[in-house]
Length: 337
Image (cartoon, rainbow, N blue to C red; front, side):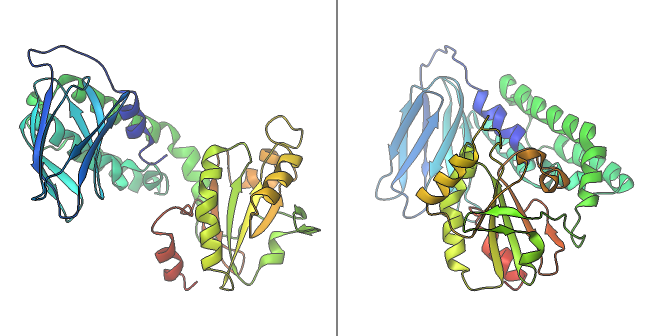
């Protein structure tokens, strides 16, 4: 759920308008090694060439709305509107962008609020894990932090200000309405608690496997299905991870929750994909898809979901990093894997 609200609002935010100037302008200087800047949005894309000295300048006939700005390793949100004349300063330390010129207040405000939503304050889990007294204090602190701004909000485009306010409202509404249920779940599945177990799941390699069979090593579990696009996008990263950690103190387990009655995915589709994709690790098929006791015990209602269990069968993280997360190797290193 982390940052989902912010991302969804950006995706849907795009509209057209007419101004006296029927274009917006960008100029600036980028970090060494960047040869082009890409502006992408709903139905629009433009690549701006960077000069040998690192400078760039161009005009864009782009509909008013939100865009992604890509310059080397820098990824930023950009709001464009006819008449905007923006100068961009790329900050190498954190791959961010500072804006000046016409439209700067709106874009710096977006940058400021994006940093809030991308921080722990934007992660509902950071609230749910707290006991009630600490949760109440954090909620007050988060709302106060959100309302802080170095930008004169009266100069921010009203559409953007309304978009940000709606994101704020949705985040805190979600946190407040879901605290009790999610807190109870996180307490039940807290680090160090004995993990729920699965018993005699069908193993693609033959026979059956139970979680207790895997004690003695860390167990990294991928709960997935053949019909799940985000699940399949993690497969290449998972394969690389399995290869790099082969022979180390960790076992990689994939549990399919394809429907046992064939309504969405099936046992046959699982067999076919494991074979055709040459999926590694321990490939298991859950006994009752999402209704399986193990899946229910972990409160899994969306996939992919990754779990990490220690060699003694205790929970390390009930919603751990994905294989594609750049921090996962350092996380494993901290655990001594």
